[in-house]
Image 1 (cartoon, rainbow, N blue to C red):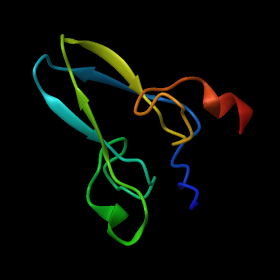
Image 2 (image 1 turned 90 degrees about the horizontal axis):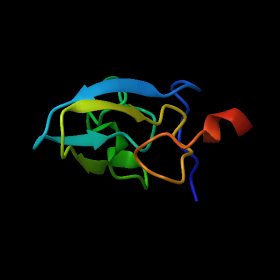
Image 3 (image 1 turned 30 degrees about the vertical axis):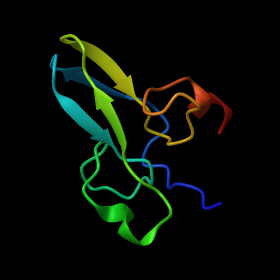
Image 4 (image 1 turned 180 degrees about the horizontal axis):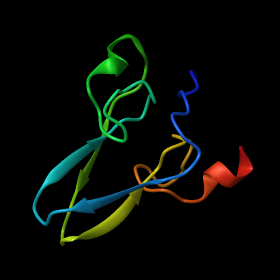
Length: 79
């Protein structure tokens, strides 16, 4: 399996809005991190949908190695 690129080794703090969908970049190639911009087209990766159920701050994974996609689980500490 192909490994994702690592745009940064820390999470992206994002204020999400209730009822809104977000599409997290899983390949690491997007110029619009942490969100998908379609750069995965020639990879085996697909974006991961995150649906916000409330207005709050969430931490999207920046290293692309989280087991809890799309949110950070601290995997960047082992890279």
